[in-house]
Length: 179
Image (cartoon, rainbow, N blue to C red; front, top):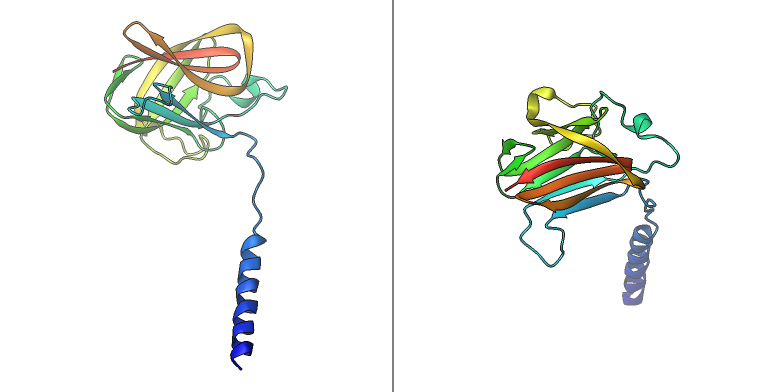
């Protein structure tokens, strides 16, 4: 009887373990999540801010197809990008308190509107609410001869601060940030 109980326990354990092993996992996201932190060196633990965003790829499409001019864009793919400031900053000339904000943009010819919004965890820009905007700034858009396939955010140190640079295709949009 003791052997039967032990055997039954082993069989039950195998059934439940087999179920865990049969779990399906999804493949790689088509627009993988990334984080652009400043300062960007992994050796510096005391970050000033970071942006969490998904990186859509052009794949032969144009920016205007994926982020149409004059329309609010989630600034990436999937969920709206989010920026976390660990200290108070001046973002494009506007004072912004430390905290986490959704990051939206409105593409335009030569100028983009860059928006910090207090509503978090938004999928795309479908529920974007202008009344929750914390800051709206104008940022110059320029072109570069070197194309970037996947939407990217990086930082460029400048005198007196840093520029958050968004790049996609040959388009570059820079927002000045000072701390």
